[in-house]
Length: 256
Ligand SMILES: O=C(O)C(=O)[C@H](O)CO
Ligand SMILES: [Mg+2]
Image: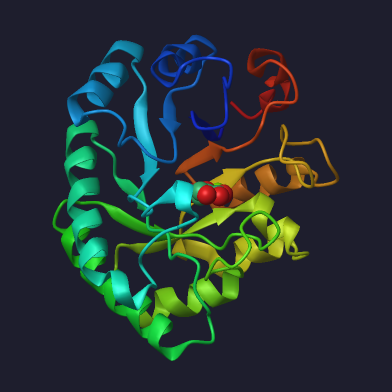
C-alpha cells in the first residue's frame, strides 16, 4: 500500500483553505501538505489538523515575496539573513504541527553562478543543522522550467549533486514525478538514481498536472516500483483536479 497526502494548495480549490483539511479527511486522506501555512498562526493550523485527524506531511519554508515573483531564498546571496529567519519561522510551524519534512526553495537564480551555488550549499548546511536538532528532514526539489521559469534547480542529478556535496544526513530529495516527466526524463530511472536520497515524493498527471493517469505518464509502473523499493514515506497529491476533487480519486484504487 502507498501513503498519499492531499496537497491542500491544489486540491479542493473551490473551498477556503481552512475547510480543505476536513474535506481531505472526509475523502479518506490521512495526511496533508501545502505550500505555505504562514497566513495563519501555528496554533490555528495545529487546530485544523487536530479537528480533521490529518497528519502534516510537508510544507515549504517562506519563499520571499511570492507575489513579486520570488520563488525561495536559499540560493540568493543577498538574502542570507532573510533565509536564516525563514528557517526559524518554518521551525515554529513544524514544531506546532509535528511536521517532519520541510521543502527549502532555492529561488530564481543562475545555476552557473558560483556565488549562487555557494550560497545554496552554505544555506542548506545551516538549515540542515537547525532542522536536524528538531528531527526534521530538509528537502530540495527540481522544478521544471516551463512551470517555474528561472528557478535555480531543474534536474534530479543537479539536486543529487548538491545533496551529496552538503552531505547532511537529513538533507534529502523532494522527487516530483510531474517535474521529472516535464523535463523529458524517465521517472522510474530517476527513482532508481536517487534511491534512498529521496525524502518525499509528489505526483500529478503529465502533461497537464491534473489527476495521476491523465496525460501520458502511466503511474501504475511507478507505484509498483515505489512498492518494490519499499518507499514508505508520503506521496503528495500535488495536482489540479480536472473537475471536482472528490470525483477524481479513482486513480487511487488498488494502491491505498
Ligand atoms: O512546484 C512544485 O511542484 C512544488 O512542490 C513547490 O513546493 C511549490 O512550487
Ligand atoms: Mg512539487
